[in-house]
Image (tube, rainbow, N blue to C red; front, top):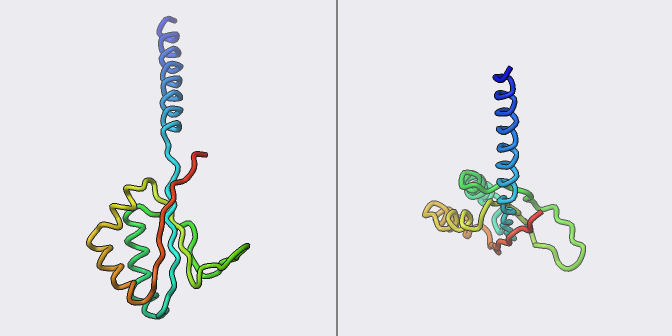
Length: 128
């Protein structure tokens, strides 16, 4: 009979420790960092063929997630971006900076700058 109490107590203690660990992990979670790019495309065919697919693949492999991208922008006040707007979510600001500093990205971005002008910035998210 004592064995059953010991097993039950062990299961209960394990569940309590697991719940405490999960609570601690949730408390440490950081809000995402949003990367925003306004893109004025001057050569849509070359941009779509030479630059965009490679850029999207590189961003995803570096840890970025696309939240929104496109040309259908609704303005509620002021001028909307001329052509494209892209919003990405990243885990941390240093991941964005690491991606932007890779030699592969710098080379690819030079190609993109032949077909478009970019306005890019990032903003840290708020805790939820």
